[in-house]
Amino acid sequence: MTDALKICEIAADLKDELERFRFSRKRSTNALILKIDPVKQLIILDQKLEDCDPDMICDELPVQQPRYIVISYERVHDDGRLSYPLSLVFYSPSGCKPQLRMMYAGSRNNLARKCELNRNLEIREPDELTRELLELKL
Image 1: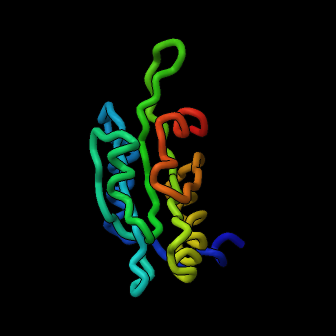
Image 2 (image 1 turned 120 degrees about the vertical axis):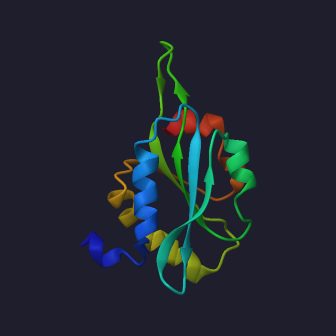
């Protein structure tokens, strides 16, 4: 049934990039910002951010266009351990076109499933993506 809901496929080169990102040994917060090509109906890579923080990611988000953010967030646990959970953030600003929002919303679950991203959240404004939110939700 979930296959019936998918709208856009993941581009082949993005699948490879996501695989490399998933198994990367980098020890910092890194992110891939993904977008949909509405003509080809493909999810493609928009930007790759390395050694970044939530503020840097927010600065790269467009004001009125949705994006997916695949983030490997550096998390320091209470006992001092470090982990890098891989998560999906769906950015869907309130001023974007309804057709575009539907395209992104309809493709979100398929992207999360194909990339094995169990942790995901949704934001409406770029400044909602904060260190505190990531610590709390992820």
